[in-house]
Amino acid sequence: MSGNETGTLTLVSVSLGNPGDLTDRAKVLLRNCELLIGEESRIVSTLLKSLSIERTFSLCNEHSSHTDIVEFAEEILRRNGSVLISDAGTPGIEDPGRELVVEVLKRGGKVKSAPGPIAFGAALSISGFRISPFTFCGFLSRESDERKKELTRYMKPGHTFVFYETPYRYKAVLHDLRSVFSDMKENRNVFFCLDLTMESEFQFRGNVEELIRIVESLPKGNPVVVVSGRSARTFTKGLTSGSKPGPKRKLDQKHKPERKSKSDSKKFRGK
Image: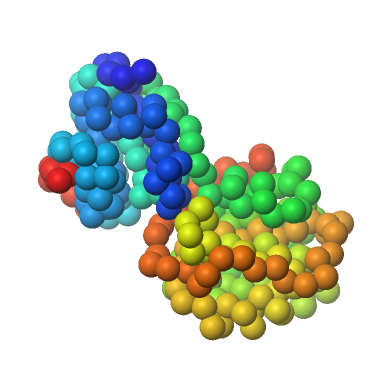
């Protein structure tokens, strides 16, 4: 259970926001691994402090170059047990951990999972939509025209799809989704949630027009959006729950189709 195996990288899921969702196995691995790799210094430090763990860690994030990631992979092969975490949820899906996994495997290392929370899975399970099959789209493009093309492509198969968005773009993306619905003459249901598992969690199920009116008054948050398949049941009204979202927290950022940074290699010490 300690995970101290030479040349092995274990991908450890952390909570989406509710600290009670962190597993006992994850706690043991965070404490005992020889090399710990996270995304953001502040978030990793806060997590370790909450577990009364004082240790060093390294960072692999969006600023990491390919050379940085290769160096991490080579170090993992030498270390007696390594752990990768993301800021929230499961690493290695919509974050630089994907490339790190590939580089470790290419060099003959082992990759294991200590599974736990994952945002798109949680959202699908509570959406109320038919989810077999579904498409996970990760993050959409930054530019509106490109996003509309992507949304059109994901709409065409006719089944449920789910995607992530940033706190700064989700309102614009919902406007793009409404435009694509209009162009394709479709009016599917949408499940929209902010800050999953937190006390401030917000949920909506219903029509995108009503959703756009509601979110215009909401603060920034970390969303997951699920679009129903063509044959989904119709919700008669939007359903909301929870208070307005609190401080933003990253969701795990992931990509798995169909089924369903200059690296700061400096060491940090969690307090």
